[in-house]
Structures are given as structure tokens and as C-alpha cells.
Image (cartoon, rainbow, N blue to C red):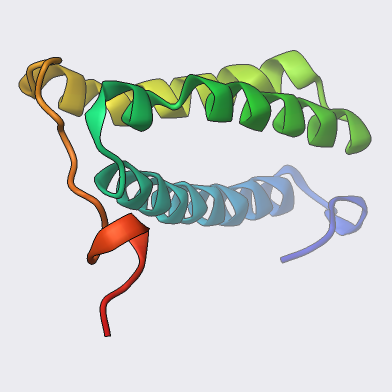
Length: 113
């Protein structure tokens, strides 16, 4: 894949964007797998939602966005949308008063041997 400054035509640019889009989609899938795994390791609604963790994560993503010359508001919106998307199926099918996830592989989230 060519660097942006090495692209000589719109076709070169589009081809590079398509490659990056495939990579981004793949990375989102990997990220979602970790988010889903974290949800399975938690119990109760507050543990799953983890509002303080989400606030901390968003502050950090905003900081990274700014450091990389990106609009922090846009990056925050992207992450909020991803988290909302991943929560939706769980929220729609599980009653709020039920502990919706069991801890991962034994006690305290530690793997059993």
C-alpha cells in the first residue's frame, strides 16, 4: 500500500483507503471480542456497564486523539457508538435484575489451572 504522498491517482488513493477500511473493520472485530469477554467476566448491571471505567476510557481516547491531531469529539463519538452497539443485544434480552454474566474461569476472574 502506498503512502498518501506517493499516490499518483485517485485509484491509488481509493485502493489504499479500501485496504485501511478492511484493517479497521478487522480491528473493530478484535476489539469487540475483548469487550464481550470483559462483559462475561463481570456480574450485575453496574459491573457490566462500569460507568467509571467508561469515563476513564473516553478521557484517555480523547487525549490520544488530540496527541495525534484528531478531533477528540469525533473519536469520543466513535467509541460511544461502538460501546452502545455492543451493549444493545444484551440490554434487549436480559432483565435488569438478573446478574447477567458469570466471572471468567473461576474466582476473581483468574483462570483455573
